[in-house]
Structures are given as structure tokens and as C-alpha cells.
Length: 329
Image (cartoon, rainbow, N blue to C red):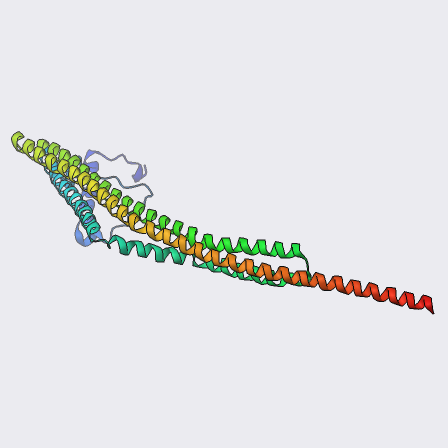
């Protein structure tokens, strides 16, 4: 029988097991581990051998309910502080605006400034109207050379219309520009007052709202009831007082604006009347110039017609004389 076919007995099996354990122990030694066969690189992800208890030990501890309440209280305190500052800054801006209304130029100076500004607005249109009038007047002067009275009348009509355009531009248009500028400035000033007052009221309202948020945060953080209730009452009074102050400042600003621009209007209206009167005088002078040129053009046309009539009569007489002379011969 072949030796390999001999069935090992119990003692032989135990000996082999001891030898296998000894070899594994040797491979685990530091000096021999580097000679051990490299492990195969498996594509399977390695299993996380960390135990649940170890994972919980490495995770950050969750804040307690008390700590969360303290954090919320800190945020609410800072937010209320910022809301109060924002509201106070808005009130200061509105106060400064109201104070600025007391430092405006006197009404007479303001009215004169409106006239100067209006003059610049209509300067180009007035210059164009003047140029058109002078061109029409030159046409009128030449209109008599044709001897046509209708042409003279048509040229005079156009010249008068151009003179009227000059009057409107230098008079009515300038006065309207003064009123338009005054109304525009008044409207812009009112809008600025409304904007500043609205921002102040909104800031005060936000401060009151932040005070309620702070009160809830104090209550959740365990602040004594009498303390957070007194704080809320005080903060509400401050915020609501700011809202009332913003409305009072707006009313004061509107009253000052109305009084000031009412005074400016009283100063500006006589200037507007003066502008129209001066323009009317200028128009009257241009109308006189048109009448004078129309008269001369008419007389020139009449002379041209008379000369033409005489020339025609002379030609007719000459023709008649020539015909008589021819007949006698």
C-alpha cells in the first residue's frame, strides 16, 4: 500500500494543527510580516469595523435645550439692538431734513433763481422765434417788388404770426417754466420728506417687532417673568414713541414746505406778470415794425403796378401811332 494512502491517525492530525498554528504566529511577527505574501486587492469596499459606541464617542455632543435658548437670546438681543440703532439713525436723518428746511434761501432770492432758470429753458426757442420773425420781415420787405398786394398781405400775416410766437416764447412759455420748476421742486421736497418719514416709521415698527422676539427668547431662556415683561413694556414704549416722533416730524416738514413755497409763489407771480408784460411790449414793437414794412411794401407794389400800367399804356399808344403812320403812308 502507498504511503500517501495511509489514513492519518488522531495523533498525526493534532501534530499538523500545532505546526499550522506555529507558522501563522511566525508570520504575525514584525520581522517576518514584510516577507508575507501581499494581500490581494479586492474591489469590494472595506467594511467599517468601527463599533457604534466608538462612532458616538467621536461625534460632537449636541447642545442642550438650555444652551440653545441662551444662543437664541443672544441673537435676539443683538437683533433688537441693531433695530433700535437703525430706527434712531432714520429719526436723526428726518430731524436733519426738517432743520435744513429752516436754512433755505429767502423767498425773493428763490423766485429770482426760478426766473433765471426759466430764461435758460426758453432761451433757444425764443431765439428761434426771433430768427423766424426777422426772416419773415425780410420777405415782407421784398414782397412789394412784384406789385402784388395779395403777396404783400400774405407776407405781413406770416410776419405777425412769427411776432406772436416770439411773444409767447418770451412771455407765456417763460412764466409757465417758472411755475413748472417751482412745482417740481416743491413736489420733490415733499417726496423726500415722505420717504424719510416712512423709513423712520418702518424702523421704529421693526424695533417693536424685535422687542417681542427678544421677550420670547428671554422667556424661553428662563429669565424671570417680571424682568422680561418690564423690558418688553419699556422697549414697546421706545419703539412706539419713535413712530409718533416720525409722524410729528413729517407733519412739521410738510407744514414748513407749504409755507415756504407759498411765500416763493407770492414772490414769483409778480415776476411772471412782469415777464408777460415785457414780452407784450416787445410784441407790440414787432407788430409796429410789421405794419411799417407792410405799408412800404404796399406802396412799392402800387408804384410797380402804376409803372406797369403806364408802360402798357405807352406801348399801346406807340403801337397806335405806328399803325396810323403806316396807314397815312
